[in-house]
Image (cartoon, rainbow, N blue to C red; front, side, top):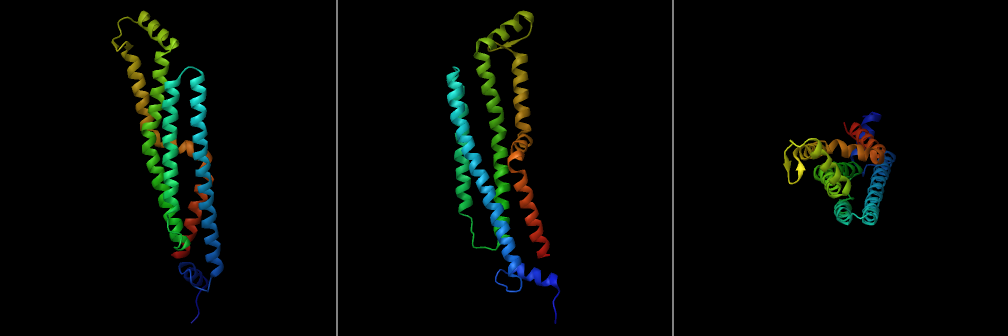
Length: 213
């Protein structure tokens, strides 16, 4: 006739309308909302920082006589800003009338999908940034003098479109590595910004699932 405390907690957590453990439901509702709101704010500020970075790149590189590179990098950064705003709009459409557990699981799925999508995008972005910078260097006076000096020292090295093939091979190999390790590089980029929030999110979900067992 009596129920264990564990059973009461589980039933109160699983059923949002139960009166036997309202404080537990309220606690996890509050925790869930707090971590989601914090991650959303961090993501918004990250988008703003990228937009500011795009403007700064455009101004600084143009001032140093590299308008083509400035426009290319700024355009790619603004594309990331557009994508981020689109993802935030998708998050706002998420159903908030579900239980705290269902909501935070939906948010976790959205977040993991976002990271997976950005990882695929950065497989292109990282090598594209690198190739654009190398192209700018290659057409600069410094780059042209390096190529000319190499051809004088190593005249037997084959040349492709005026560039020693060994240079082209090295550049393409580095671009390939940047694409291949894009996921790891992206994780390193995110850690200083999101690592604490990601850990708290995992802990909350783990606690909720432990109560549901």
